[in-house]
Length: 313
Image (cartoon, rainbow, N blue to C red; front, side, top):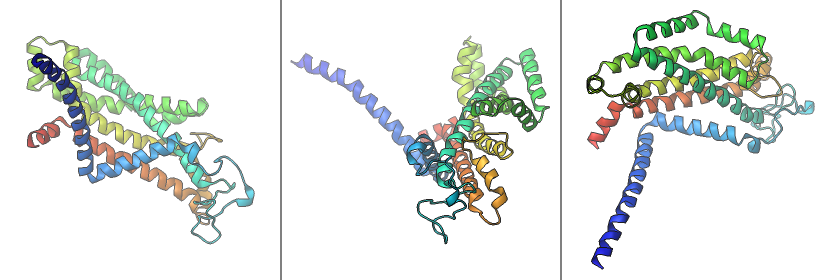
């Protein structure tokens, strides 16, 4: 009887520890997020934009591409002549601006996130290889980076989009293959700094495999800078996509884009300001939310901040 009781106790302890560890980690992240006002604001904004983009088809009160000339240029509902049926008014073709903003968030997030993922992966691999191996590897890779920097990125994007049919996939690939050089340069400089630290030198001295050193020592110590660059790149990519759509080389009708909405409203700013103002506000709020969240992630994922807070807890 006593032996059975001891065996039961031993088998149940690991399960309790696992639950406590997972619960404690989640509570720690929530506490750190709540302690940062900018991080909380950024998380709320980004979460709302993501939810809107995912469930846009269920949230829109009207078809965003439907023309209704009988209701064209209606003001927002709080202005004289406005209607609660069209909360933010309508554009020059009678399309509901509120519905178009909701659907347009999907395009902005798709282009912003996936182009940054593509650029980040390429830049991380190139930067780590150049900084860690050095010598002829560093020379060749950095000359390739310099050649990309010699070409104005916006000019290159415009030329490619003028040759190929503009689409979401084309924008993602072109922007991703253009913006990776900034990642490569920053990652390389971080790797060069981390590689000279004592714990990396000690790993080399005891014969640790290079791949293991990169995975366990190099990448964890540069990830905070990489995340900050990625967050800022998502924000700037959303603005870039809006700029290209504004110039007519981005997302094409009937697809909805915030930049294309700005184009539709630029000729009506003096008389019907709401057509361009609300998409501009949506772009501004989304970009600020991403930047706030990126700054918070930089502080939380910095190893020095982590260990200092853990030791003081």
